[in-house]
Image (cartoon, rainbow, N blue to C red; front, side, top):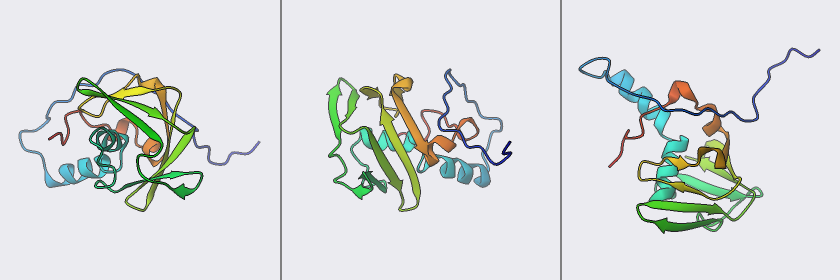
Length: 146
């Protein structure tokens, strides 16, 4: 029996979270850690996709190992304040800031709301760095919303 390192192929958790400040003033260290958790996360990606600002936010899209025009494999339509997203490929690779590699697989179309919240959450599967950022790096949906 091999007792080597086992990495999950995917994870899924559901529910809601409630965030409230633990102290009146937030330290710079905590703010830095929150930023580190946010940038390159699935929340950052979904908000960038919603606003069509993937390029400006340092996300590059790859299909079959080749970089492609950013929105070539995304069908994005407006549904009120939400965006309906359909992937036009089975899987797309995502490179954030030329370093962090992830991938997205959509079982079917999904919507993204103004906060970057995908619905239904089980419609998409994230792989790579985005899938590694789990509950320990969870942020409120209104974090950095402008």
